[in-house]
Amino acid sequence: MGRWWRGGEHHTFAVEKGIGRSMQINVDIVVNMKCSDLHVNVQDASGDTIFAGMLLKREDTAWSQWADGKGVHKLGADSQGRIMTGAGYDEEGFGEEHVHDIVAAGKKKARWPKTPKVKGKADSCRIFGSMDLNKVQGDFHITARGHGYRGVGEHLSHDEFNFSHIISELSFGPFYPSLVNPLDRTVNVAKAHFHKFQYFLSVVPTIYTVGTKGKPSNTILTNQYAVTEQSKETTEHSIPGIFFKYDIEPVLLTVQETRAGLFVFIIKIVNVLSGVVVACHWGFTLSDWLKDVLGKRRRSTQGVLGSKGEEEE
Image (tube, rainbow, N blue to C red; front, side):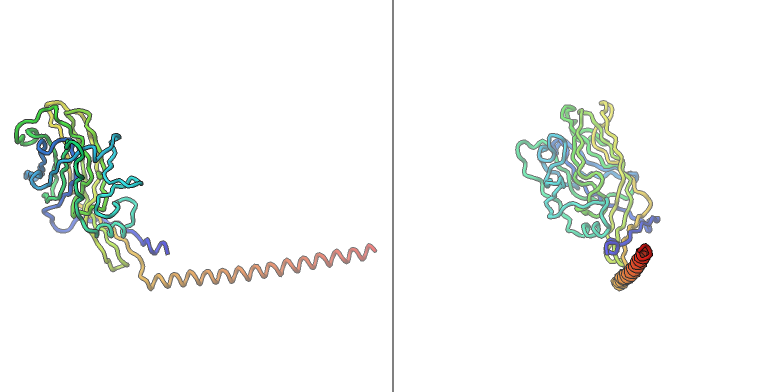
């Protein structure tokens, strides 16, 4: 019954069919700088520059409300350390969960949690929301006012640089907030004003599908990604900030979970029960036979001893 419930999981790689021109990115990041001091942009391989700061929401917040003194994400954490986003569910993941759990989590209503009411001084900026990107290699970056690829606005004093950040959500494709991605719950603290954080992401389009053999019933289309990080202090001749360099892999991963139909499952149960009955019958027959054999041998031994005793007399 357990094997039938879990089903069989099959992974298939194939060249992605068709041409996708756009891809959604979902971001929820807190940076330990004021919103007015930050620039958020995207520059991709096609040469387009997207002013993400105009498409994403930015709200003032306090750093202490998102991370504790040890640098651990603490917003809405339950007793087991899991983040509660306020959307009414525990976060699932892309790890060891079964495909039907991932599909079920992906079907839940998507909404962004509210920014907690600021307690004390607002020293940070929460950047969150979704936007469409060109489905090509690109660079999503957060830099300081007056610094970066365009250097728009008055230059911010170097003493006010602090690119410590907390990532609560970074995903590609449709927004499924209940699915945890590799960079979710990341807390990174800058040790100097001139600090550069670089994340290199390899994005793989992924389809999760669940159903009986030959009859897929539930499907979600999302993206998984692998990530490597490089963090280092920089000099004044380099641009400090937070950089997400992403590359779209030209493959499509299909993860399909199937289980046998109910009729086949009942036949297997009947077969198992029949096997148990037959095994019990043979076990009873053998034990009964063994009992008879041991009984005859015992009676034979007693008879022999009795005859020897009579001869001695």
